[in-house]
Length: 357
Image (cartoon, rainbow, N blue to C red; front, side, top):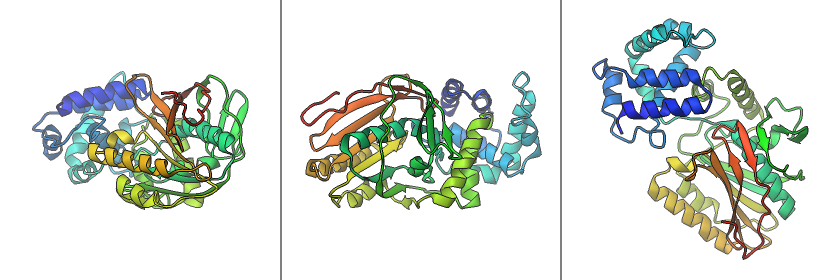
C-alpha cells in the first residue's frame, strides 16, 4: 500500500478510536504533494511497510508534529492544535502542517526514523482483571515479564485503580484511575504479591527523562484531554515507583528470561498490542521459547502467557491466556485497543487437559 492509502486507513482507525483531530491530520497527510520537500519525498518513497501494522508512518508523522507543539517550536501549529482547533475549517491546519514540514524538516525526518511509542495505560483495563483472575486460581506470588514495555508504565499496573460498577481493583487513591465501559460479570478481587518483575523493549524510554516524556506524550492524541492527563499521571507515578526496561529483542530477552524456574511463584509473560509489530521470524521464535518453557512448567512453578492482541475479529482485541503445565488456552474477553471498553466473558480458567480455544 502507498503512504496515501495507509494514511487514509489510519484516519479511519483514529475516528473509530475517538480522535477526530488525529483523523483529520492523517487525511491531510494523505493529500500531501509528493514534491513538497524532503519529508514528503521520504513519505512517498517509504521503503518499508507504511501501514499501521507495519511502520505506522502516519502515526510517526503525527507524533513529530505533536512534539513540535509540546516543545513550543512552531507557532502556526500551536495555533491550530487542541484546544484551539476548528475542524469545521481545516484550511489553517493544513497550511500549518505544510509549513512545519518545511520549517522543521530535520526534526521531522529524525522523528520518522523511530517507531511510535504508545504506552497506553488504559490497556491495563484488560490486564488487571486477568491478573486478579490468575491470583484467584493459583494463590501464588507473581513473577512478571512484560514484552514491548516502552517506558514501563504498564509494569506498575498494581499502582493503578480500576473502577467499574461501584467496585475498585487496586488503589482507589491512585493518581491513575481507569474507568472502562464494562460489560459482563465482575472478576474476582484477589490478594496479589509480586516477587519480581522485568521487561524489555527494543527502544525503551525512561519516565524520568524529559525527552522521553515528550516522546510518550507526543504519541498521545492531542484532542483526547483525559488521555493526556492520565498519561502524564502515569509517567509521574512511574518516575517515582517504576522499574527500568531492558533494551533487547523480545526473543533474545525471552531466551534468557525463561531459563530460570520460579518455584512457588506463577511466572506471567504478558504484552498488549505489541505482537503485530514483531517480525514474523521473531514472533515464531518467541512463541517457541514460551511454549518450550511451558513444557517444563510444574504445578509448583507454573507459567502463564497473557496477551491483549488483535485477532481475526474487527471488534477490538482478544484477551487471551495460556497456562502451563498443560498448555490450555482461554479467551477471557475482548477490549478496545485503547482500553475504553472491556467485554469480560468471565470464562472459567480451564484445568489441565482442558482447552477453551
